[in-house]
Length: 305
Image 1 (tube, one colour):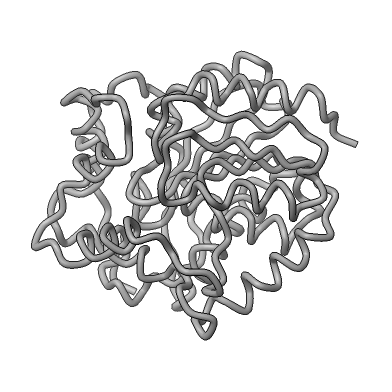
Image 2 (cartoon, one colour):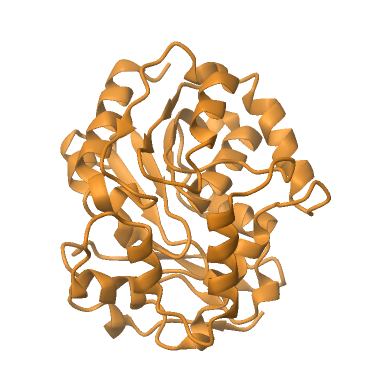
């Protein structure tokens, strides 16, 4: 598998994100290895919060939440998915599959970091990956936080706005990824923040992952990932792992999934689920601090067994 590695100086002068990166190798699934990056903060012995980003962002997305979570005594771990952020970037779109992304995160979180009693925070693809991991490795998880995400199986149609996004990101001659992030926010992002979202991608040769990911979302029942996602739903629908559903009030892509999670997952029932106000798809940008405070409260009221 041929990969690219974003030069480190592309990440100089990131606003409000001075956390030193950490790196580890994971098998690439093709006989080689990939370098994955993550940042973390908080006490080493604190309860673990694993924050997984989605498309086309990276761990920088959690910069408003990390201080709140770490300040509450939690160990916050924020990886960069393969193909994003400081992690290695396979050059071919065909190198990216749903199954590989699940395995890459599993290898980092469990084989390298040996994370246990994890509180998952998953948004966008972070939920598509993280909820699969929770279903397949329930012994590793203490709590689940679903934030503007889902677990599609292809049995229900995706909204038209998502199809327009997929067409735009797959067909654009070059990608302005800061602009794509801005389109999913209600707040106006500064030039410095927009540049930070574009930093992992010096030119279009680095963008195989952002271009590939929309095509990996199951949209038909015969999609390669549909059986595994259906199996995950079956497991989660019997799971008593506590779940907090913290969706924003302004996400046309994932909004309908919130009520489904609340009524389907036993660990989500009989719980006061917050609606994050004045926030779009990337609610970590629009309302990161309020979202983090809800997570702190959730953890405090659901002690680890």
